[in-house]
Image 1 (cartoon, rainbow, N blue to C red):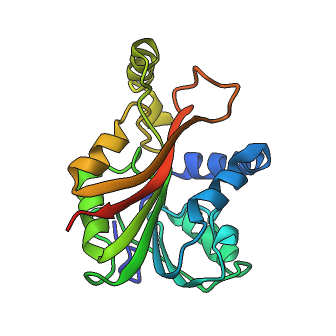
Image 2 (cartoon, rainbow, N blue to C red; image 1 turned 60 degrees about the horizontal axis):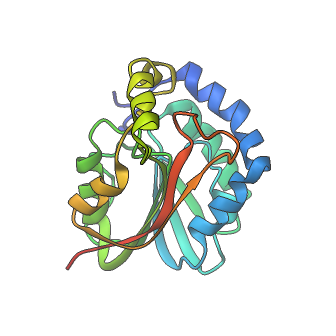
Length: 217
């Protein structure tokens, strides 16, 4: 639904507060280093979709000219506004949804998603919107949890998916996000698989990918 200023608003109040409270623990367990890897070498104008409470903000390199951070959840967006004030680069936090990004065609040098494509209602539509706002030679930086390669773990994720989205703000633990990126018209130029945290190998959201893709010309 729209807010009084016309921005799109999504409300997951319990999940938003849970995320804000406990996400800092993951930063201390290696998540911060993964965020630095995700954003390393970025330059120019950047769009971050699903910025949450702004955990990526402090890791943007000085080569970035500015960031537009889109976050639909009202509580998290408020926290992101506070985080933006301490960021090393200029960040504008705005409301918006993945299927209708509030930006002009070809207006960004890079787009960033981290823990986002699992929870959007329509991942192909979100990826198409990201491609729309990227310049032809732009980059999509992604850090997402994905469906496990192993059959047993994948079936465990399928079972978890019955309740997980209701508890975790719409997150689906069993999406094949790498394939979705490729089918949406991107060429993956760099990607590595990992488990996070390393000790949680059978967590529904432990299998992850981190990398870079570019729109196919």
